[in-house]
Image (cartoon, rainbow, N blue to C red; front, side, top):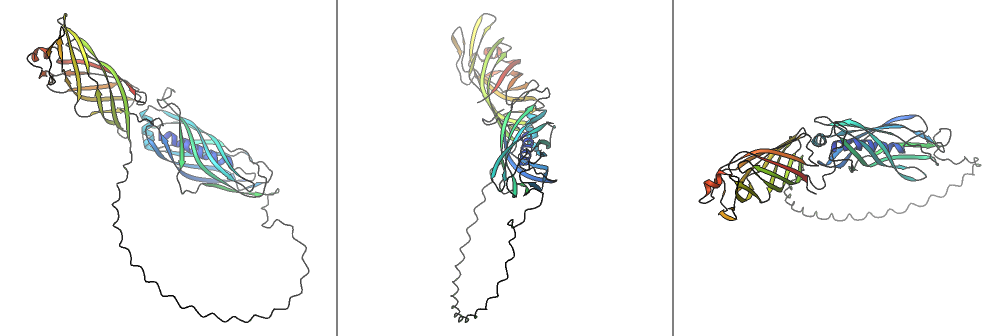
Length: 440
């Protein structure tokens, strides 16, 4: 299976939750007032990039009690805020894939406070509560924090707008250790066209009254001026001759509607297919020869998150095996593995199973240094099905060890000594063990 280069962004789900937290905190930081608080709620949508699952849409609902008014020169108190974000099912699948049992972290939300004296960018940190990751489906994550105290210097109106988020997330396994994702950052961008105004605060002079529209002291009423003589009405100007209506322009011939371009097929969304790539190193023990051959190569696979099924291409480099027939006759053979069809398997509950089908070729076989078969057609009469399985806790981001047992069919195309050569190769109970490490 294969991990895409930028894959280290984790699971949308957890990130989503962080997102919410951040949004909430940030906005709240800006809006604390000195008078009675009123409940405010704001719902925002973000696009957050995560490892394994790519960019995911995250919905965040911010709830807080914020003041409707604040007094000039009076520091506002701190207010509690909370953000509830909904983690989508795809993120849940990604978290389970890496063995995450819980998710936690911090969020920083960018906010803007626009007040009469200045417009201030503000970043507020919040804490994302440790949350259990369910086996499937969407789940909610809670982030909470407090707004700092603010002091306004001029009366008027202050507006608090919520901006983008930066999530720092740590998914953990059941034993508390980190998953292969480690701790990662996810910069979340707010969807365009949304109303991101959290609240508006009226800033009043000390005393709590709303500033009058005209703050100037009322002037002494002036003595009423003598009414001026009405001016002679001016002679009405001759009405101008109405201009001849311009000839209506001939309506332009409607252009032939252009043939609607065939709607381009929408780019196929990546869905829940994740690409992985691994280097492969290992060995195979051939029972009849009582000898081992080294293995190297790679595997590229695409994993379907929803089902845990994957398909891939397994490539094994040409290798060789050396043995002694009857305990003293040295034999050396080149060995090529040719994949037949795709490698298939599943990654579920922390365990990976895979099945590859390979035709095994022996293009050159020699004894005492002399070739006894030199045919590119020397190969197994039927492909070998090689099942592989990992232990528990296989981490798709870190790789792991796979092992299995397979049977080698009789050989064909090996020349006059075909049956002799086949006798020492074919048979069951051959074993293979390989280590997978992620491609960088």
